[in-house]
Image 1 (cartoon, rainbow, N blue to C red):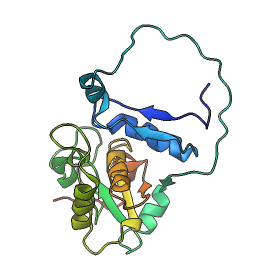
Image 2: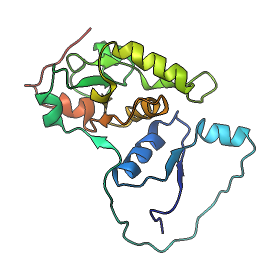
Image 3: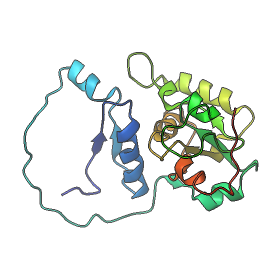
Length: 199
């Protein structure tokens, strides 16, 4: 029963980590009317928002008409081919210890893609659980990027989920639509011929 004309509002309890991926996927399908609930479920409850529980009745389904994508997807072949090029800036959203290769709880290889910059996805939120202001996010991303063009950014994380809050934060900051490398570290390190950096 979901149609392109409907406004989607997605939310979670994890700092737009999981709902951010749904936001990105809907845009990838060409759905323009999608928003992330800033502050998540916690903010909704704190504001006195209504809540329901229990089983929801079935809604008759229909095929969703996929339209031109409103988000960018970077394939591993492209990421590998442009590695080290000025046409690509990789931002890794994992925590600093995983980025540096000090620990790796999921994959067989620890470290990061050579040349990648590190911005943990949690850095986009204030202590109140809301996204930082557009001005603050813009200043932080521009400081991270230095002289690199924001349009060259490709985001990744461990499995293509927690990278999305960085992508969303760059849009909030007015830095445009950037790409997601959905396969992320798990796909990159699955081939021992691909280079790995640590530190």
